[in-house]
Image (cartoon, rainbow, N blue to C red; front, top):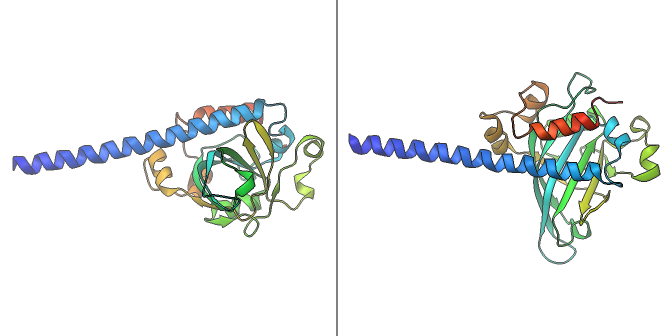
Length: 230
């Protein structure tokens, strides 16, 4: 009897430890994304405010890595999707949904360094495609390298065909980059670790999930920079 109780207690301890470890890992991911976005927004040639002000969602993949040799390789990353609140996605920023990235042939874009990737979703069509499950940029959602400088200042999302604008930042250089063919998918295990239950990305974005303490600095940063869609 005592042996069974000890075994049950040990199994319970392992389960709790596993959950805590998973949560800490996702908290670190959110912290890395906050740092990356803070630096990108503060740079003179960082993410243009005009682009962010027109966005319905942003996806941040901090420290994306390349494995493999030569020009062809595999990039992988873990990040999160943050969307604006409201039926027309015009309001402040809501709770993050965790996402993964699997991009073959990143090659020159990544080189041999870690790279921060920022995907700016410019319309509700693009948001729906991402929220509905696994997508491939350029197939399910039209994507383009994001404009910077004067092109960004005059950019009008409603007049353009791109659902998602894509940027990269490596060694302090932020620029538009093509991520055609990149595959994105909901990171279900990470969402469970963050919210303590099985939940879909769509439910997180549209259901008004509370913003966790680890995610709050990132949401505050976005709200401060771009409080509403313009």
